[in-house]
Amino acid sequence: MSFPVLRFASCFAYSPEGNGSVCDEGRSLCARLKAADPIWLPRLAASAWLETVGHGRLAAVFGDTVILVPVPGSTPGVRGAGWVGQRLAWCLKEIGLAAAVWPVLRRRHAVRKSAFAPAGQRPTVLDHYGSFSVDRAPCECAPIGGGDAVRGAYGIDLRMMLVDDVITRGRTLLAAAARLREAFPGAQIRAFALLRTLARGETLDQVLDPCEGEVRWVLGDARRAP
Image: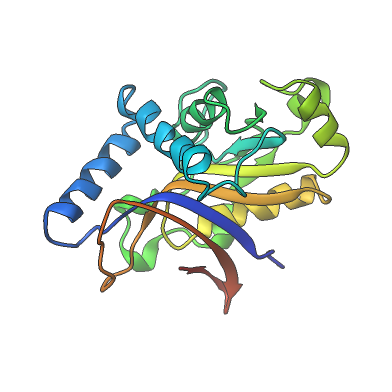
């Protein structure tokens, strides 16, 4: 397999094992995000809007021709707004950070949930890649949540943004990007995760910490920087 370099952005950071009030705040935010808390999720999306529109820190990430592609959870699901990535994508679209939401990425079969797996037993990039498929029908027939801007973008310079709740190493997003690249070879594909995980030994100074970086395929695994 050949995986493209994937540019990503995130808005918040947290340390799973860190000590102190800031780390506690980050873990609390992660728990609310994973639960798709109906009160907190729009507030967290609004923080991304403020960083983009108010401060310009994520201005290159979003835009009125960007199509959001939610990353599904670890098990196959039904159509609708059930999983966190899709709910987050709709929140981002509704506050004006993108033109449309296309839930075209599917799980063909379940993979082990990384949060509950030991480090050496978490799904690999290839595990995720094999579990994903892309359903092109919704975007070829009728863009979901978009108008003329999306139809124009679909024909020329299609900008697609994978949306997930948390990025750790970036395995899931790298695999999802590879599947999208197969279905839309001419598209610009990037990723946005609301929250990024800090590695062991990294210091968490503040939870709100907008960041842009990349995920690469290195020696058979995903490598995220920063």
